Amino acid sequence: MKVNRFPKMAALQKYRALKLGYPEELAEAIGIAEALKYAIFKRIAQSDKKYEEAEEKKKAETEKELDWETFKTFKLAAVEGMPFVGGKVETPQDYRKAVFDRFGEEGGRKIEEWAKGIIEKTPESYLTNEQKFFKQVWVPHRDEPIEV
Image (cartoon, rainbow, N blue to C red; front, side, top):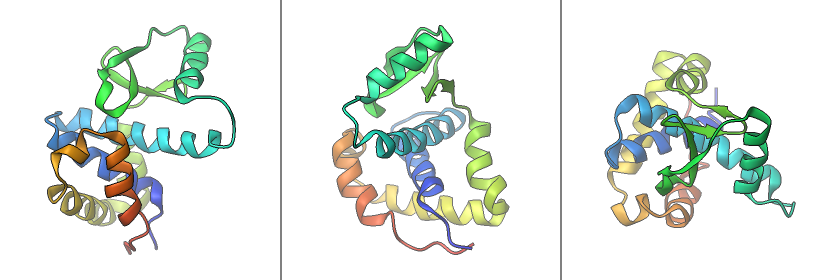
């Protein structure tokens, strides 16, 4: 089975967060939140809506107070210290569902090994800059095949 872009992005973002000093469980939540954020970006790319406006609208529906400082490097909103995307808080369990439950333990390990190898070679200046990360890390690697 070929691995699609979503779990690849989640794993890359997890290892990005780990390299930036976040604890593993929070890094997993950041990873899945970032993958969801990019999926949302893709959907609203043709519209005039901005991501923050979309999240603020979802916040209004859920009556949650959004914190844009906790995960500023990732440009993610936070609720009570956890990433918030698409109207819900993302957790390490959401990450495990997308990477390990879908592809199994061995498949999940292959995806994570792929991501870890890329992040180990990535300069910190790319890790702390969303645009550089996207253009210099994600775009060149997103279509690399991972067979599980």
